[in-house]
Image 1: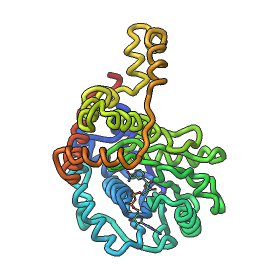
Image 2: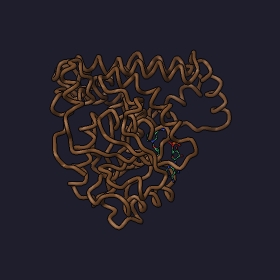
Image 3: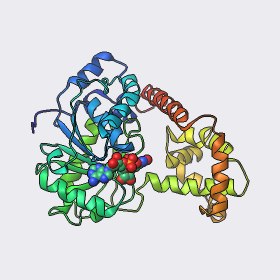
Length: 346
Ligand SMILES: NC(=O)c1ccc[n+]([C@@H]2O[C@H](COP(=O)([O-])OP(=O)(O)OC[C@H]3O[C@@H](n4cnc5c(N)ncnc54)[C@H](O)[C@@H]3O)[C@@H](O)[C@H]2O)c1
């Protein structure tokens, strides 16, 4: 492994959300793409939905990628995914990841796939025993200083690492789907993970143009999925109670809090809702009503009747899943670009 260099994302993008790197300036784009950084090779274990997306991002950021997945036809599947993703990344000023000249390799054996890796990003099935076996195999074949990250959305690193010789090496690097577009990566480590392991993971994801957030402790679902779960519970409750349809509920979100939360999260939004006195005034003024509302929030279950209702209404989104996903990706790209134009500190 070569260790020369600088994390280019930091060098060329000033505002926090610009870490995802929409480069309006072609010179800056070229500089970013050509700049050398510490990382040369990524091994992506599991080439499904998330693994394919990470593969695209790592290739776009100049890494050689080895995909390790024993599934028959994996190369064809990954190349088809890259062809679908490439136009989106090109809109962000990144290179064509579907090009045959990309340094993309396939190796179904973990022990050899991880040789020489700077980063191992695991995206295998969400099953503890499978992940435990994978990480033991990774540890035995990977360089001693490689970063070990799992995309798992629910299994703590400490549980996955229990059979490793050095369990402190493994962290959760949890992306939001699709990782090649959505900036967040939640980094979650066991309580005894050395600080430098976390620091190196943060530096890596920043160099990939991501916005890593380090959680101070392990908690089921991490942060983003807990928030989604809380909101979705109430969403399912409201639809199940017949208050609104799925489509109405989605429109309520995208035309109000969704839009607001793209530029300022729940805390800052209520800070601004408090007027000049900020969050303390907001809580003084509206806190009691909010507390009363908390007591009325619903609980939801996926019982037969609820699932049948949700299934019926999900036919009304106005397109196939592929069409809706393409529309979403296009809109998210436009959003990223629009946020990129907001001056730093605005
Ligand atoms: N799908 C999401 O929205 C999402 C979001 C964030 C995180 N995650 C996490 O990412 C991980 C992968 O999820 P996914 O949705 O991509 O799953 P997926 O089912 O699409 O992909 C899993 C892949 O792992 C491969 N695999 C199975 N056994 C393997 C082995 N022994 N070695 C190597 N590869 C093997 C399968 O062939 C498959 O291609 C999970 O841990 C999940 O929690 C998923």
